[in-house]
Image (cartoon, rainbow, N blue to C red; front, side):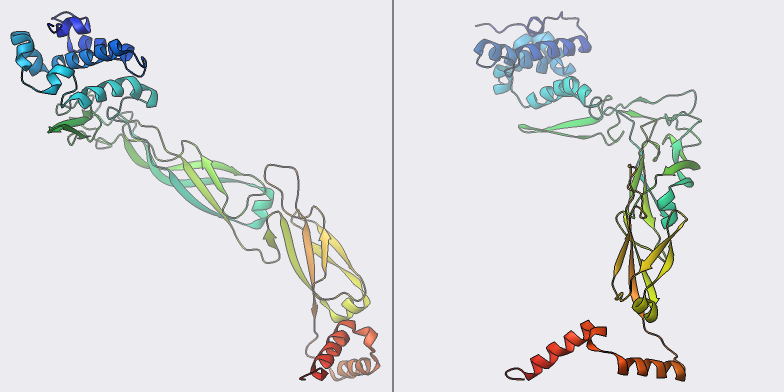
Length: 376
């Protein structure tokens, strides 16, 4: 059976341009692709014919040979001439997938000269009070910004980037080794598909320059140590008018001289005298809102006793709620006693009964029992 003319297979005339041939191939390949026509043998044969025709006509040298000698130009070239799956089949399919699906992934692969800017990190230390109330702050940081002279193109004003001659604007070059086709980024344009022949004097062709910027940020109440704040688009400018990266601010909260924090709760250790712990009393503690709270100490308070002050802790981020403040008492043993103070304490010790010190009495009773037990 005589083989069908390649031009007729693609539905184009002999004077068709490369763009028209490629467009016809894309349309027909999508129409007769096996995945769209499962189990249809006729579509599969048609798909192979389309690929074979495009493989011959997309290459200028092969097309010239076909125009002069017809199908005889490819006689004896192996399976590729008869079935449309020659050494460059992966090449033709790569072309169509680049065109058809690259657009859905943000542009054709290897053709964009724009590169997204890098993300930046800024470490910021704040006080516990600032974490409680929130803070408006200004940051000054050097970073890459779009070059105003060339508007980020990288080319000298009055000029523009030109198509790379090595890869013809594809951004990739392809070499064949036997049955395999190897594709790599173009070494001349680094995969951008275009080169700058006359770079901008201010940015050297990168499309960005380094400047110090001032940014205003709002730190919300309730942030914790290690909180990360993201400022979209405030990172480094992209190369050649590419999109900017993001700025990430990492917060660290300074240790406080009075309070310790655990999430939204605050803890405060308050030393009290032995007499106040024994007789009872009261004391005042500061709170993060700038006020004071009074804590009543019942008689007989022991070390480690906790008092809870509800809603006197830290704000809970993105809510109207507050944590609690916990006051923990520590009984302080008096030092540097006078002779009279020592006498009074000795009198108190002699007059003390087991009921006055239940914990110590109970402990030493258990110790005595342990030492007097079997094997003691």
